[in-house]
Amino acid sequence: MLASGPWAPEAIDVRWLTEPYEPDPAVAAAADEALAGLAARGSPSHDSMAARLAGVSAECGRLELELQPVRWSLRLVEGSAGESLFVHCLVRDRAGRWLAGRRSPWLAVLPGSWHLGAAGSVAARADPVATIRQELDEEWGLAAERLTLAALLGELSGRTVLLATAAVLDGAAPRPNHEHDDWSWWPADVAAWPAEATPELRATAAFADTLVRR
Image (cartoon, rainbow, N blue to C red; front, side, top):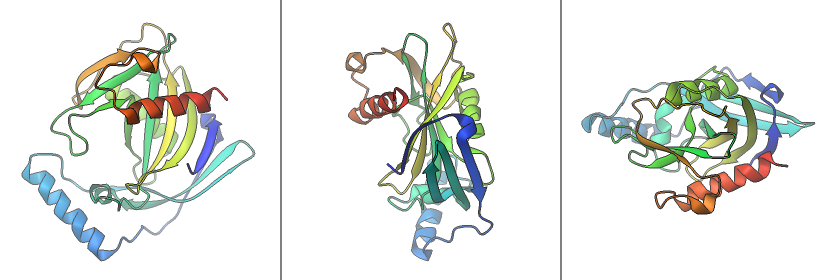
């Protein structure tokens, strides 16, 4: 864990570096090869510039992020994502249920896997909090009644993840986009989740719940 919240959305400060991140040439070549592999199987294979975490400071109830442009495709190289910044927002209704969706088989990353809420990379020069709200709307047609930033995490994959939770109104009806081929509200009690809920999903939910309740 790089930094622990919770933080309100207005407590997130962002500063962008001008120069893009330069990966090792071997990693860049591996990213090119991975993109070609995606194209061969019919998955999205365009590259773009995303955000990379270059520095972080968490003091006095605020989270300061220093970000830098980075190639999106580095995430495709195992362990070499270059600290690319992703957002992951867990979604709950007032009854405490968790929104879960299964990723469509055509997607480039983790096709066919179940995940919680909405997630996505942060584009170069974009605001991470605005990206969270955008992903909620695009993936599920939902708006957060209350949004809380829980933690900043470093993964073995080389990604960094800004983890958030969103509370939605009772009766909110998710409208999943084409990135999902199935979805469900999972029970508030993680122990009652279905078999497709992996240990990683259960741990993520429990971790976020503990932070937000502090």
